[in-house]
Length: 118
Length: 387
Image (cartoon, rainbow over all chains, first blue to last red):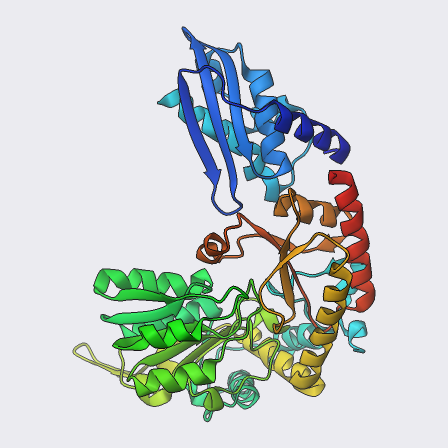
């Protein structure tokens, strides 16, 4: 993973976060490191028409939440729920994540799954 | 300190500041383990052959070294366990507290969780708070001590570096009729610790944090407290005799060491104790103090927030404004500097400090002032990148 690329996204993520109109929401936490992510999902039938978020934590969890919101909106709920962890990471396109940081990268997906399964 | 030649891992060129988690091993320890397997390997105690005798002697010699190193009156009061966690769990299991337990908010999970489990047998928990500096609030300790049957305290905090006044705590607790368990995982590797002088009833430490192999550690006990207790883990080696009707348990320490122990680990632990004894714990301490002094002086020019008191063991936990601890650790890793980030198995302490995670740099005998220079250079770079 390229640090400068990550930091660019991290800055953008911090600027663009905020709660928007939504039907579902969920807050996920990585207790051991203190990452906290809330996702707000707007539904249009079976489609996730918009994802907004609030994130506080490390650069990876925040950036991945932002990327997830960008890249998964417009997709089908079922399609999102069938995404594996590996597919998700690939889709975010930031390259290899070290094993110690996988939880940071996956917290947005874990949180979104919870929000959608409610 | 002229020890770097003894540590093969240094060839990798990594600045290793994660010593509070585990230390690297010197050649002398690695060689002792290898030598055990090359020349002396056999199961202990029950064999009437030369190898078994040698293995038994090496195993017991390791305990005599540990007992001497820590001022434990008899090597029979040293129960080998796989780490401090297992030692602390064993202590609480043997004590079986059902009344009031007093402990502190700075405990590592390994001393805290066995106590929380004891709540289900009716025990109640009270916590001694901290001063703003990160020391134990002794006024709070004395005000809560009355009626306690057990006091559990860490000798040195794995996050704050705070060195607690264990001797004073033991004296007050004993006056109140309470037993005392000491978590010495972060003190035995760094300070001169004397079990008898501290007066504690139980004291646990891990070998791997003091140059010895993983899977080693001990619970030091006041023998008379446990010599008649039923062992929570029973099996080969823990008995004097068994018939189909009854069991006569072995004496100490075999009673609490059922099954074949970690023999090569014990031999490695003995070698680590020899190594540290040759250096002298006073010198180990002086070396860490000089590193701390340099660290604090270099930190003055940074926005680093440091947690814990001035007087501490050789570790520093800190945060940087608006940069998550994991990001700090990740960046330092890219500069070949190993630190730890997170809550360091002390969640309640971090909630108490009001911080989601800290970065911890922890030092040992092979670390140098030059390495601190590299660390702060990298930190400067990091602050620029994240600004």
